[in-house]
Length: 349
Image 1: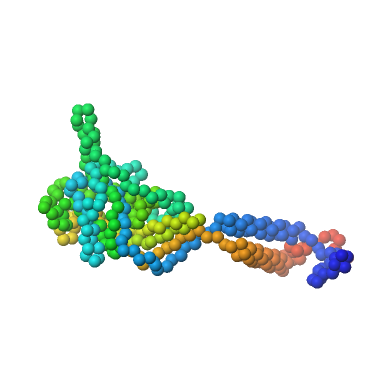
Image 2: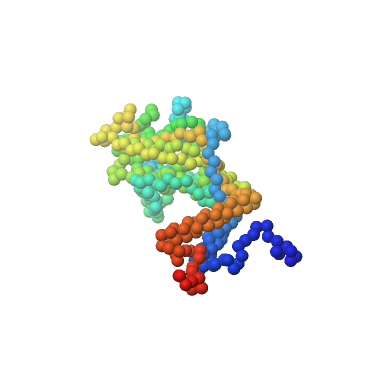
């Protein structure tokens, strides 16, 4: 055992030739503290995982898409028609698939009026926690609600339109127009009753998750007078899959552009300025997969050793470089590695 203690394959400087300094010890403490901090951070990343985003050409062939909506329009329900038309010139009368409910028009608290929502990608934890599927409720009859004298409790001046519709998964347009304006009908809505002031509570693609925020959710377009304007919402839809701990949510995100045109002098041109609300949609060929991943233990150890070794290497060279500059500019007494003492002073010092 004594022989092993004296054996050293890498000879070191003898202790009597080593001079310790306060500055050197302080730099060592700072280096070790930095190493512990980074190691703690890496351990947190290892146990907490990281968010991985993959972009690829959408491998899934989808023939149809579901559009979910919940809107208030300041017009009687019997004067509103909803149609869909896509680039294949396929037209569909979707009013029969939606629920029309007469209601007193109002703007809910917290709605952004004549303003846009900030378009941000929702976080993975937010999606997993709020992806609760739901269905729209049954229709209510506000007109039947009267007081003791038989008078209506509410002034019914609006229409609540909500529900889900399935359409061809190609570029198209969902059109909310007044009866007889834009499509031929056996009658036409009077111009003085057309008012497309509206509130959008929900507008999404795919399965209906009411707690997930979308760019159009909670927005409204309100004018001081009756609106015979043309509102166009242009959306670009990207299929997105969120994955975490075995849970998977297949939904869609979309970008948004808005256009608003109003007829001059209140005159409507049937060819260019039909009043209404138009949702244009197109689908990107790419899909996004956002998932929660973790490194393997071997990868974590290799990563941790590599980072800590690099920090030690850089710290040693930083210490030497700083010491070299101080000695050459201010003199040996400013050295970080060796501080002269009284014992080192000779007769000629």
